[in-house]
Length: 310
Image (tube, rainbow, N blue to C red; front, top):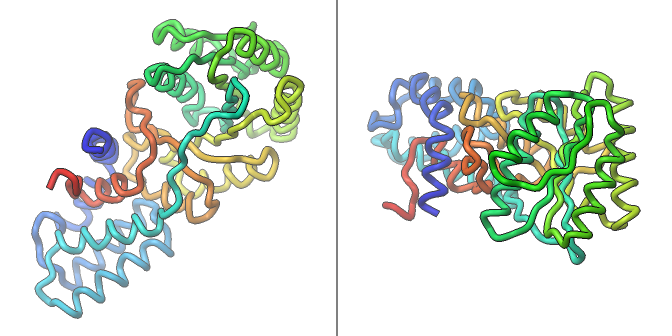
């Protein structure tokens, strides 16, 4: 757990730094006062925690402050982390294998969300756990996506089924499913297209991919995860609504948390959609795709150490 916490601490450094800057180092040992409470409220809104979560955090800190006028910023941080952990109860997705191999994971999301790199990183992670994996390059609309996934697959020594740009994405998915099953692979990870600006065509393509996968396994895809850019805040929630309605999502992967000061979007997305968060992107390297851990996230946001290390 300590190693996982360090990943969250590093990945959420920008979010914590932004909160610390707006509150003038409140969590470094300052005593709580009315001005610092106002600063904290502004900082939490700026970090995209939303009205509900910000209100809950401030309410509990204010109650503690009334009971103890000598309340320190560090104590307030502990309260904030506890509120976040409670708000995220039930949010941690845990990957389970299907009854019949391969377990099919479809990764869905708009262009630029980190979907293709997540496909490769997830494949690498499963491979490190001793699982056999096939990747399917089904974002055939975007030439860069196929080449990008090929590059990642070569670098990480992952098996890939791909075709040329413009090929029928569902045909690629079908071929990949047949290959994965014939070779006895544990997992098939399907990278799909993400051109939301042509929404009807995209949703039709996703539905076709589902149908061809189900020709081999009626339960496929066993997991349908939306990959969302964690820096987009409320826009991520709207994306999730659209895809959930059309495709039926089973979970989320939140990427690019290391590159934003708006890491509070994770909480807003969970509270709005109640879709479990399976993984978070906390950096550019394959090992930076980490299982979501609510307590590590909450403590890292407030600049606290891992409880297991204190």
